[in-house]
Image (cartoon, rainbow, N blue to C red; front, side, top):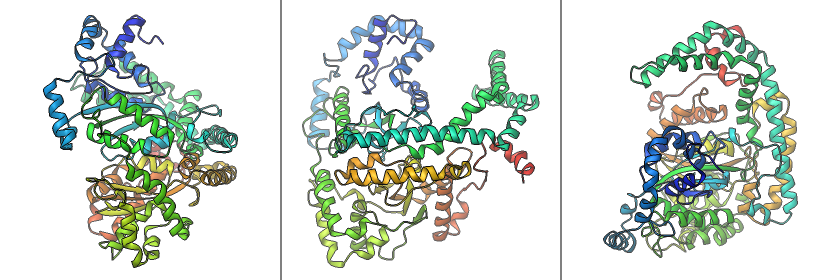
Length: 586
């Protein structure tokens, strides 16, 4: 596909080859080079999460529009640079002294801090949302930005085939289920859009933004903010007029409908399944990339394995010694045995813990008098394999179980692998029970420890309040009953693949550990309804309330937003509501 208007197709492909380790590939890294610099990469990764366009195409369009002269200067020397710095397969050439040093210290003697100095910028297109969270989304030292769910939209047809889901028996039935969820998602978007568009709050807000006084006020605010950003320089007359026209057409019925549709997508997404396709851009160092790839190729899911091996193949082109040497990255037998034989053993040993009690609290902080005991460590070890709360697990365990469980969890550990990841909770431990669509936002706060239970349907689902107001909650509940049947059938064959069939509205348990300052940051940023989903606003406020039970004086200094808005109010109207809406509509 010819993307660049200022360059021939052949020149475009040469540029693509110079920048990306895998030209046209769904999984690739960006070569270290100066044509497309690190600071230029930042807005692309950010806007990437709000666009349907592949990252490679976005980069080429940027170079074509904003740096054509620089690219033209580069073009004649690109072939020479490639020949000087890379082998035929695209692997960077490494001097012998560098290769020996890295092989000796980073690989043979395992001085992992050396690996942390090699930085990667990469992306994965058309992967499942589930795999994103199992890989880039779960590693605490990875910085990913995935496509927002607002840009996941279809006409109700079956998305690209998922090898894991299609490998299950009753593949056609699962395919029909996915098509049903997608059609219901599209239908819910239309129904919610019509409901919000026709609500009197929307009508009053649109009348408000129509006035010339409001338009000019917005333009003045634009000029003021741009002067600050541009260090005192005002935007041009053309830019100011463009901003004015943007606010003038903001009240146009077609524009209003389109914007409301984007608003309601955050609610309709409870229909989406965990296996829905997304894309993600990410940054991380070589040490943690190796750990992430090892985890991916050691899972039972085909998608994770294939993506992991592709990441490894592309990463070797940039760090051929650190990630290319034998034994650096490979299948983790400990993880593999834990997820297969140990999971089966735990489920047989604790069958009652597989059918947990349904609860309504989103979050609660763990306060166990025996938290600093081997028995509590054993309960942490059991937590990922069952469905019950950590307290219920602790009460169920017998003293005689403790040594056996701690032995089993470490049975296949290799030298240097440390303790099991589920045992590393220290600080403030919060047990959350959130639906997937909220957890995927909360999981962005990676500065802490986390262990989760398998995604399933046994803890029930959340029904967005907007569904109830629009009168589509009964239809949603019926669809979720179908989802429960599909999940249980799939789980009887493969509990790992079954997770990908669970709609985003279903809840599952996680243990999250944060230091108090990080917990304070999460509450401050996630309790603001103006910038986030109302469901995770509720979570953040409940998290503050739970924290205040432990630290009543300290909690007074944690910033928590208390603004309240009607669920049916279009988010763009929140500032209007603050000034006059709430007084006119009491």
